Length: 181
Image (cartoon, rainbow, N blue to C red; front, top):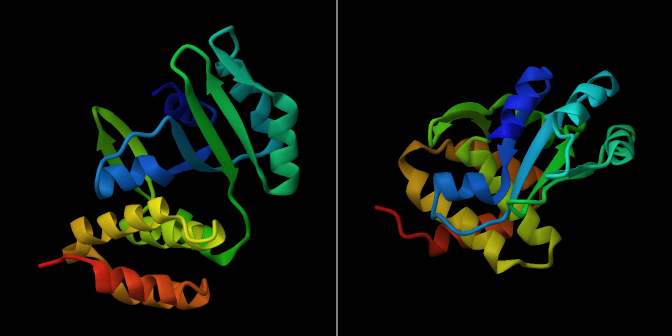
């Protein structure tokens, strides 16, 4: 994936998250966007933008700067493939820092990439479900990761963060609905 190569060449630390990772760790589903958390400094902007010059990509340098300054996000569009990449800035939020420190390398179709841990994928999906007013899609993604990864999960870690993130109700609902052996 050109994005991973560009991040590594620019020495920008990253973590793939979102539906792509929940599909790897749980039940595959179609998605046309990729979510990444990145730790990017202003000094990396020029090289990163240069990696995506040309008519096949749309990347706005001003939006990158605004994302860095405001701990926000920016997008990269692959015009030919119809893929959108959302880059979320790593913040000082304790959960953000914790999950970024727990990322690991996964080989996906011959591409080595840093991805969020299954525990953090579950927590992030439950958090998004709550923030979006109860998104069933986010909840089901978390549920499927839980079911597939159950034997390997650090349940104490999830319990602790579910309480801190105020998503204990969704976490309990997930455990009740899960079909695990």
